[in-house]
Every structure is written in C-alpha cells, then in structure tokens.
Image (cartoon, rainbow, N blue to C red; front, side):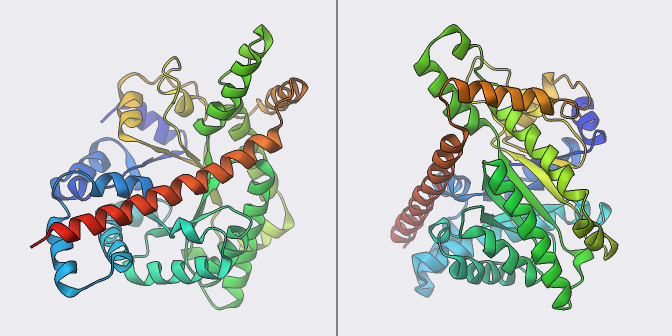
Length: 368
C-alpha cells in the first residue's frame, strides 16, 4: 500500500476510481485497488461504459442472452451497466460498512439525453435505483438548469445522489441548496436522512483546458503567465462556498436530524497538458471532507511520486479571487467559460451514450 495514498486518506480525502469495466470486476482488479491502493469508491459515466463495451469479450455472454430474449438496445444498456454497478457495489460493500456509509459508493449516471428534462431525469433515477438495488450506490444527475430541481426531487424519494458536471460557483450554490431542499423533503416524506448521502462533482481539468486555450490566443506574457491556474482556483473557491453553506441555520437543522454533508468531489483530475505534473489536481486540492475521483493512471502516479503539502486549500481564497479578476481584465469571462463547459459536457456525454448504444447494437448483432 502506498504511503502517499494512505497519507492522502488520512488528510480526509476519499480516493475513488474514475473507471469501471467488467474486466476489472472479473479479474479482481477492482478489489486489488480497494485492498492495496486506498480506493474507497467508484464513479462511472457514459464515456467509461462506451470504452469498456468496445474492448474485449467480457460482455459477449450477456449480449448474446439479451439478443436471445429480444431485448431492445435501450433496455440492454440499462441491464449491462447496472450489472457492473451492482457487482462493483458488492465489491465496495465492506468499505461502505466500515465507514458507516460515508464511502464504498458506486455511481451510475442517468441517460445524459435527459439532462434538459427534469421529470424524465427523476423517473430514470428511480428506475436505476430499483434495478441496482444496493444501498451503497449513487445516481448521477448533471447540474444543468433542469437537473437542479431533479436533484431535489430524487433526494426527496430517499435516493442518494452524485451531482455531476458542475463548473460554476453559481451553479454549485444552487446544487447545495437543492441538496438541502431534497433532504428536507425526504425527512418530511418519512425517509431516514441519516442513511442518505450525496457528493457534488466539481470538474477541474476542463476549466484549465478552456481558459488556457483563451490565454494562448491572447499570447501576451501576462496571459501566458496565468496558464494552468484557473481550475485549481475555481475548485478552491467551491470549497469556500461549501464551508459557507454549512455555516447556516438551515444546515444545522438538517445536521441535528442526522444529515451527512454533501462532500465536494474533484472530478476530471487527470492533467490534459503534458507539461503539467500528473498529480497536480490531487496535490493542490488536498483538504478534508472531499473526494478525489481519479483514473487509474493518476491513482498510480500519485502512489508512485505524489508529494503532498498538507491542506492545500484553506488560506488560498483571496488569491483565487484575484486570479479571476485578472482574467476578467484580460477579457476572459468566467461566466462564458463555465457556460461553454457545461454545454460541452452534456454534449460529450450524449455522444458517448449514443456510441454506447451503437456498440451494444453491434455486439448483439454479431451474436449467434
């Protein structure tokens, strides 16, 4: 077991693997990462599933059975993905039990084509929750304008939620409010809110990708000197907002009923610029009560050569605000950056979902 990963865990960061596949489950790879690399949860998304389905033969037996039964491609996608999620949830169940439900969670996302439809998102969330039937799962709901009320409505049903595709501080504030409203309604509906959980997935590296592209277009020494700083600053300000929302009478009333905090989750933590340290978005966002969901390459890089500096977030808020003020002075609009990223994020997942369906269709077609 890596001392660095143990140190990160001791600092209050839960390490989750941002990947799932039937091969990982079948070979015991996921269990090995749980046992030896401090992995305490798993996240998935349409892109991950599309990639898993396109490689190897791990899904051949199930796709042949689905074809024999005459199952539609749409329904096959639910059956295939929920089987992996159920299996992973069972692998992570000991972590869930040992952490009293804080960790050991596995996330599955609603069909991203429903991201602009509140009612359809809630209906799909309820269906997935029923199909997987494991207490240690999260339903992932994107933080679009239509997704925010879906977060509240899904939590109100007693369903634990991972809010995904958060880029802006304004939207994050709306997500936290939706989370609290959902818990309030869940309690009113008779659910035990102490058994529920939620995380808010704040995307990191994509912010640098978009901002740095605009800085490079400007090309001035001042602009280039600000590269690769916006993503970390944005996430740090998100943590400040998280702390502010906890310091309210509304949250204290929920906490008195046993509610758990909605932890910030740092997503998209692999560096896209090869000139950057591959552990940047782990080391610079180390702070208690957070989750960092990593691809396996980032996980192993952190274990191999990550150097932690302790709490990297508190005491940075003023500098983070100053950075965004400088970006605005250069004509780089924060509001425009996050709008573009949210739109692109939904669009990319829609494309991946369509690729997943096409892959399943092809796999079913070639079965005897």
